[in-house]
Length: 98
Image (cartoon, rainbow, N blue to C red):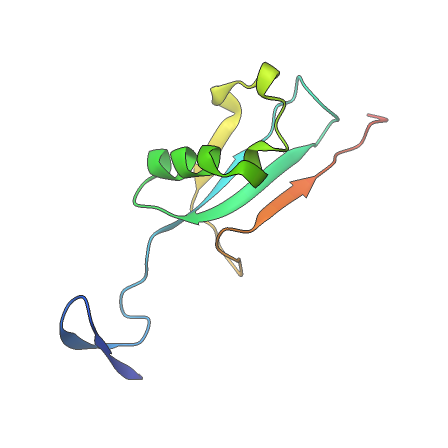
């Protein structure tokens, strides 16, 4: 395992020994918009609530949400798996025919 000097902890640690907590936040309102329409963002946060707060402060993320019809119960946060890019907003249009 590769080693490096952690400036914050003032000690040598293994690379990827301590990982920052990351959450993926999604807003998907089944009542407003096209079926399957959703917006995602992956953020570094300490817990789900903090991740949701950070997502709602992101102008690009909220730009895809009709704030007039915003309902917090459709805002979810979870731990992502696989590959992801932190702070990248992904928007999916959904299907207007459905």
